[in-house]
Image (cartoon, rainbow, N blue to C red; front, side, top):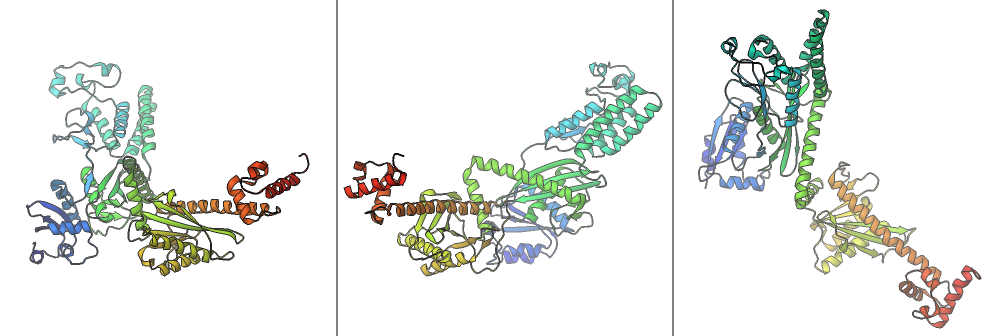
Length: 603
């Protein structure tokens, strides 16, 4: 066994990272902490309710602990990310991103070429990216190609080679795509002016380039150089169109990173927007697979470190959806409440929610059981249940001015209707329109029978009604001694409020919540099933009363006739020998005479 008490003696109250090793000496977990001693100690506190089952498994495998002290929490955060990427410990979260995204490279050479690449070579070239959207990258490259006349050849354009006349202009020059620096027809300074403008565009400074172009167009027009003015005008229109599509905030927001997170039970998604001079120049969303029930704070911090490293970000300000509790002189974490920065955060959140929905939809189409588990887990969390609500039953009452009272129960299993288990009850013990007493009887009869037949009880009971109906249901459950064995809630019709026994205030779920939609489906299905049965009973009661008006036909005979012929219309149309199958000759003649007089002679 691991002697954690001895290990803790050497750990200081300092910021840093800690590493857990198993019996083979392999790193199985890496974490960061403001206070190393307090954080590591928390793993070994007996009966710590915050530690879940997965973390307990991790702790059981720890055989050694090492740590590294750093100057600040931010340094710990950065070091943690780099070590996780290097060692890929088993119990750390998994950043799902197995793609090699392309970059735009400006080659380190005389008359630099610009093109896409997936290989980063340390040759002094400038790499911009990566670009998760290949289409976005190609649109930028197309803009550069249409706006600037750059070479595409791989000739060694040294000053000596050009002076010696070693090269001849190719077709690209003939069609106007290149100014032929290979023949000395374009100076290096002129070429580098274009490269500098392109760098500004790639860094989000499109507005600055557009402004300079406008000045050049006016100067060319004043000098009557209309051909140059026309060329510059085409470039100006292209860049202005690109700028209008990419600028979404005030250009005063010079350089910020924006992050948002959407989390599920086992996975989370983080979106990143890199903003330069009011323009989004990078965006990406990644999926994170949880390993130890990590909090959103922990996951977001890990993703921020990963993204900033991946995109070589040096932004001093980071916009986040909630306070991460990090204080640092080098970085500013902002949680905006309004204005342009809030608009950026909202945009990031829209992106991450769309990505999350798309990914989950994909998973659930391939694996329907995943959707069921996710939905049931969400319901358990939303409704504060002790177990997954795999079996849910919902009660509803119906009556007509106090007559023909009935109760209906519908059953959902794994959040789907199980129609073979639907039941209805003719109320036996209640006189008049007493909804509370009707509910009490229905709930008592239902679960008394389940107990007698030793059938499984539901994990959740839903009562269609407010506090009164809920109290009536609870009374029956307590009589049966099963109140503590299951959960019961009531749903009020008007405001979709959920009531719990003994709670003064109702629970309000988001109107778009999947949990509320399942509950509404249950309630609506119970109402539909109850109303259908109630109408049938009411109609049978009305029809039976009509038949009882015939001489010699009592309640029992009327019920036999309806059961045999199914409707009064068919009884009216029945011939004597058909009626004799149910009633005697005297009764048959009475029925025929009654309906003949009702329709009138020769009708």
